[in-house]
Length: 168
Image 1: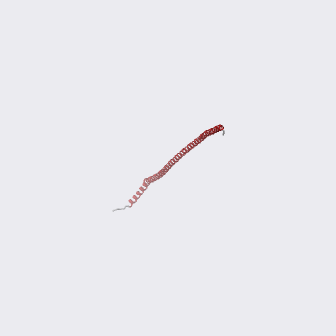
Image 2: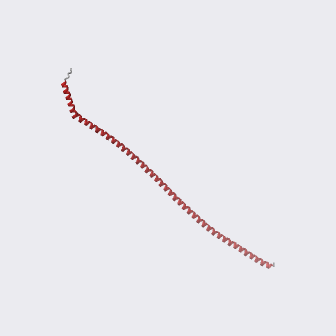
Image 3: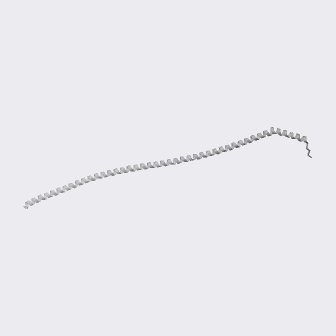
């Protein structure tokens, strides 16, 4: 059966206690400290990993924001270029229209001058022709009148001669 010796028990208990204190002091303490240090290091590493992950997320968000800003700026540049191109196009069209209108206006003025010169020339020509016709008509009219007067005077002269001879 199991016998219990009190001295052995007490000695065993003292032995156990001494062993426990020695182990606690030289083994459990350093192991506990080592475990605590290791736990702290792991906790620090986890915290650093979380911090780095947050920084990476922040950098990613910043990168995406910059990318969006760059895209928006590129779009603004494209739109600005389109607006400038449209303005240049409109300016060129307006300039071409203005030049065309000026050329049309100059052509109309030239046509008007040519028309006026033609009218003036025609007036001069008509005036010259009218004068010539008037001269010719007057000459004919005078000649006809002269001829008629000459004929009449001749006839009268003849009539007087003949009538005078006849005694009328």
